[in-house]
Image: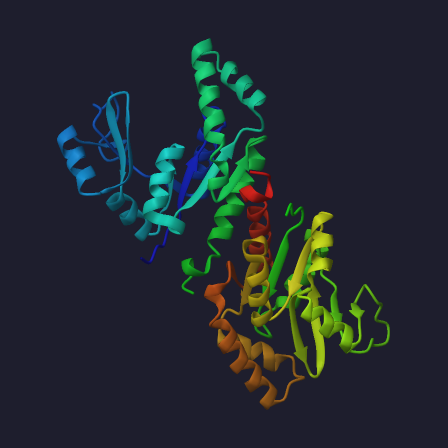
Length: 194
Length: 194
């Protein structure tokens, strides 16, 4: 496969600052999110093909059976997935794509794509700081904070599995790390025709 | 091995601009060259332990037998080699090291160190431009230029074997690529304790 664009797969525990860093990659580095398929109903203002591809459960399950998803998951009774056709079409046209998925999803993508995707784990500076950030939101109750911390601890065990780990102690510094990773990956021999 | 410093192995055909880029890495990015062992006699002004470790042939061959060299080669009847002890000692103390060696030497280092070293190939923008640069020096006769071009063509076949290929079309741009590679490599999980 001649792949013109980069596929950056980003995972992080909740509260590590992934959303902000993804926004910066989109606003300042020309990346865009891949559009997922989902079986959940469109919310007000959501546009087919921009926010999601909305499909019924039968269609989604048929796509699973045909192996059309790079990764998929069921969340609160709804199915979400990233189709290979969508990703491949946009990479081939030279777009740089961002996949914002959890560690399990990243592992599915790795099985399908290997080194053709770049796997980055965003790490909070410490569990203490993560707890402070989760509480700081003020929207989560104690049980939710405790559950997220336990899950973060678990996900952080997978950091060594990723190509790169970016410690998000300071957003601009972490973003510079991401820009360096993107620039370095554009120097891979197989991406420039060697 | 806990490796505090980075080991950057740089290869390039003659005329690709490797010397300038290495100088920039030393002056502006804190790298230093590893000091090689050699059997040739010191030239005027050369200092033991700074320019080379000067040893006799018997000592050098004994070091080869003991497997003490990361790489070694014979050039114009003299032996040159990089000892693992020298490299390891300086990396452990946190120094970032540069190895400026040819493709064959790089391949020896890869066998010993695998992904603990970073392999970068400096590529001239084209063979035409390389020929222009080699002639531009004005110091080489036709036969030398032809021999260097033939060797460059051969070495460029190995580009795909390197971790990164930096096309030296413009020195500052190529140097920025090298800085990005260094910054990205510092985000490798095994280098930051994951």
